[in-house]
Length: 243
View 1 (cartoon, rainbow, N blue to C red):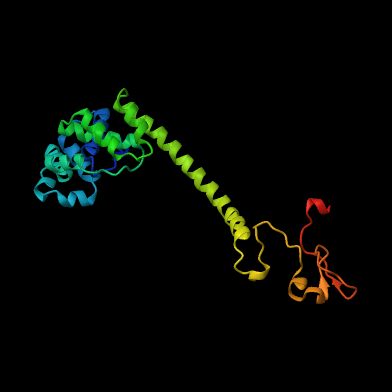
View 2 (view 1 turned 90 degrees about the vertical axis):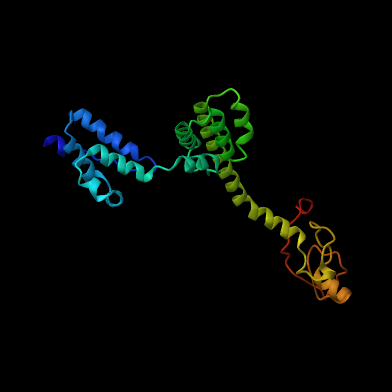
């Protein structure tokens, strides 16, 4: 009874149903459980309800562990044709490249596929930024080494992409402002627009519009000033020569 209370049921993974029963059998071996009925009812109690619903009722009431294991496993095992299509198809890279490679290897082992085919499908699934370096490395590295190398290159590529995006995010608005402020004169009247982006005006607006009749002026303006001209404080930053 104490052994049953300490028993920990494993998770059931549809892609690897056999793994569920391997963990069960490992725990039974540690507890030296050999009774078929105990194995059967422990497995029944540990299987998810949706899996049990897919198993024929006759099997669920058979008290036969081996029959139950076979029925639960066959529900999720693909046919050989489906597995061939899965291996030869375009499998998207999800997660770590080394984990993706292990899945390809397991699939290739079940089908008896060559290592070269598994390697080709693995390289085909990688991002274009990693492909040149790993294609060269694949000539001398084993599959496991190739997977670990892909993990490292993926991490480096990911970090460099983040840094590039961060740099562009922080710098682009400033560059855009400088570009717009130095080249966009559409809001300035044609007669007042400078000839060059950094050109400073030499005549104030009052002298441009009214000439010698201007009644106000700026200190930096070179227009003719009379005693009737009123000096207006400048808002333009001084140049090094003026300091």
